Image (cartoon, rainbow, N blue to C red; front, side, top):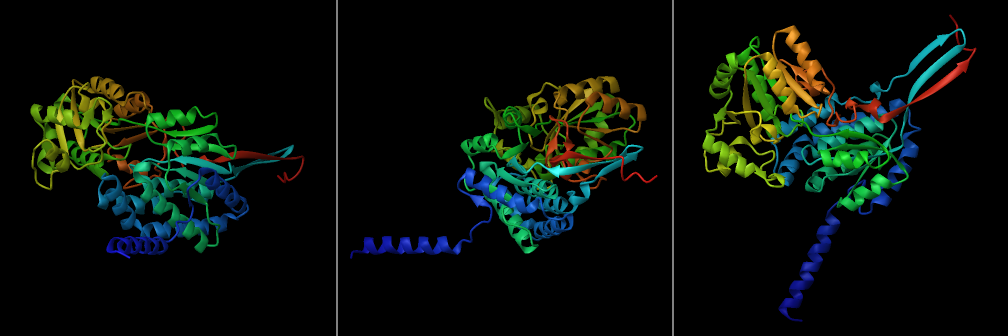
Length: 459
């Protein structure tokens, strides 16, 4: 036996050792049909679990999410190259603490001369879900908590660019369920998700509801599937600042929201429209107090050529820090620079396009009416999210009616809408296109009416 043969045998032995050292991931399958079958079998158990039993499982999922928050955050940044580890840790704590569970499932009842009626919430069964690479584990955890609380199980076709992170979350969820007395496979996913596996899920007879979190193309595909669909699509949220605003606070809120996780959240401020009387003051505070870099025309042109391609966004730029983006165009800045700003017309490509990067164009408006018109144009009819900084109640009201978005944040950072520093639930599936808004456990249930004639009315 020569040296080369010995080397090959050693390689094979090491490979086998490594394979056996890797624990099997619960709920992660190589075949979509088998994944759906497993979720269907698990749902038979889930639908018969009491609310208390479901809540015990959810409580353990929350606990495991907090325990693994840093691991999941680091995995996502390493795998996708996008976002900020510290902010992603905060997002995992947020999803663990503020995603509604079984308390969101309520019963309506009324009685009259002819008896009693109950309207209860029941499960769809097995739900199909498509998740993004921007919030890969957060979306998996958030969706699972809400869907499971309603008595469902879920089949994920995760984004291929973040499949390791998403599958780690699926495995964690199933182990948490088993520890708390629930079944395995309450959430399932694919080792290698593909367009083909997605197509199988969309067409499968045992999938009765599809929830898609992603870009407009993904949502359109889901809504064309012939099944009930919940679509969380794109947004280009403007932040309007009028002459009555606390301009200093507005600068802080806008930059904090825009730079959170390097602008990956779909609700984050993507551009600013400010009335002429306050725009210079606003930009002053952004630069002097909030760590913003003022991009010259030359830098704007270089950034445009770098972050936008003929096919759309340069994926290597999405979710990158301001420092990293500027380095791509040959500019070195201190670590405290967290946002790139400039003044431009609303049609500027870095303003009109949803970038998901900490690049914030500021559009000048003559007055509130002009600002409102420009903000409506910039939101592009997505009806997703919009933000405003104003102390004028009439302006706040008019803006809310004109934008007609699923989310509207007034005088706070955008992330207040998800319960981070604001009074709200947490969700990572915001169904603007199909009208459900911030999804929660109740969203993933169907109404069932039970009528008792001429009985149980005791008034």
